[in-house]
Image (cartoon, protein in one colour):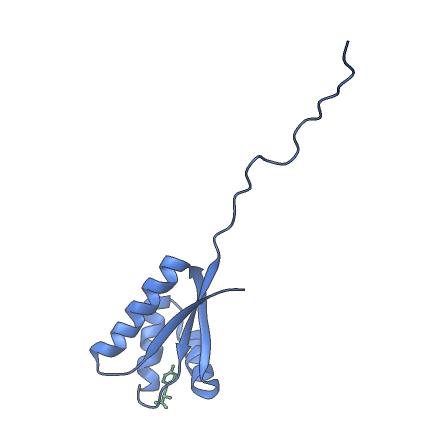
Amino acid sequence: MSDTVTQPRIKPALKTERPKLHKVILLNDDFTPREFVVTVLKAEFHVGEDLAHKIMITAHRRGVCVVAVFTKDVAETKATRATEAGKAKGYPLTFTTEPEE
Ligand code: TYC
């Protein structure tokens, strides 16, 4: 007769990794009108007037501002669309993305 005791498995066989989030970053420039930056932030990122203004003025003063975080695909799509909205009006408005630590 064997005395081997089999312990129940506590850890799941495979852990589900949370996808890494990516920041959308607004860059300042000298040409895009402040009001247009606010309009793009409201349209693409669904923020209200007050938060859009706060994000715009932070980028204006500090050079950059994190707008929000999303999964990689969503962050890249939103950054591209928001940058294109500026380009369509002839502005150099730029949104970039980078992975969160
Ligand atoms: N600096 C621009 C101006 O003075 C306004 C601006 C703010 C542009 C934020 C881009 O990300 C930006 N008209």
